[in-house]
Image 1: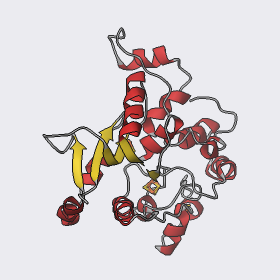
Image 2 (image 1 turned 90 degrees about the vertical axis):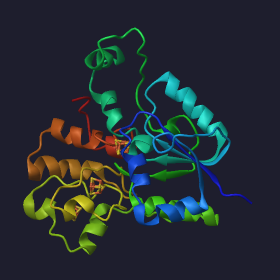
Image 3 (image 1 turned 180 degrees about the vertical axis):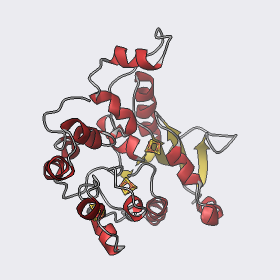
Length: 259
Ligand code: SF4
Ligand code: SF4
Ligand code: SF4
């Protein structure tokens, strides 16, 4: 049996997750030894059509053209992986869903020539197609990416636990930014897997990996307002930034409709 054929696709995104997938120098050659990267426009000059065994999809769907592309990807790939928070939940591009403007008004903010622009509300890819695996994060976590590849090669399900970032933060013996420094850290509602990267560097978690399995966004929103002094609009911005499309984070927004 030959090596599994792997493809990387890009929808609306910043390419940071594809870059992370490439930025594994110490073991890049090992990975290339076990998979055949058949399609990866960002990394290769020669790319080949499907079918593929594994398709990594970076980015959210923001236009009818991308939706057609995504449906074709689903047809061509045995396994589809949503790679990064844009693909999982809509991510940063989904902010436009909540800004209180119509699609046309949003388009006019970005482009001067509008005749050929057709955009639509932004969702993660599982809004449209079945997704087999998710790699969360903005960008993805390298270790989770490698765990997923190894698991797929072995034919087993990767074990990702989505308890809160606080769990990883406490294990690192960090001083809690929320309790001790009154910083609006979202670690308690956000899925772990990044090793509490931001709090370990003194920065509050911004929720880039989306909701934790035991997410209580309403309670944290109240803490942000009562204890930290954030306005309702500020709280809404925090919960809508990466995963506002998820029912869990939308609960943190309360009745504030847009910002
Ligand atoms: S998830 Fe973040 S890093 Fe990845 S493509 Fe989207 S914006 Fe870029
Ligand atoms: S700093 Fe943030 S992630 Fe760390 S324990 Fe406090 S709330 Fe949780
Ligand atoms: S600490 Fe929060 S914002 Fe930072 S990488 Fe982890 S999940 Fe993302």
